[in-house]
Image 1 (cartoon, helix red, strand yellow):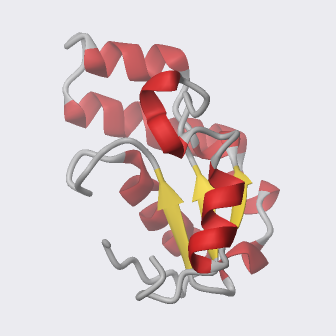
Image 2 (cartoon, one colour):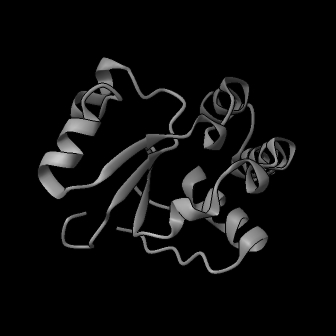
Length: 126
C-alpha cells in the first residue's frame, strides 16, 4: 500500500472486529495504517453485504451470479452513489474486504457500481 501511494483505506467488510482478522481488526487498523504508510482508515458498512446475502453465498445456497445480483440490488436500494461523498476517492484509496482476489469479491462490484454511477473510478488490484 505504501508503494502504491495509498492515502485512505475504506473497510467494506461486514465482520471487521473478529479475532480471526488478526491485525486487520477495526480496532487496530487505524494505528497500523497511520504508522506504516500514513493512510487514513474509514469503515463504510453501506458497502458491505448483509449477513443474509453473505451466508447464502458462503453456505452454497447461492452461487456467485446470485450473490452478485443480490449485492448489486442492495447497493441500488442503499443508493450508495448518493449516500457516499465522491471526494472519498479523490486521493489514492483502497477497499478492504476478506477476499484475496477480485474475481469473487464485493469490492470489485462496489467499484464497478460506483464507476457506472460517477465515472472516473479506476480500479487497480493490489
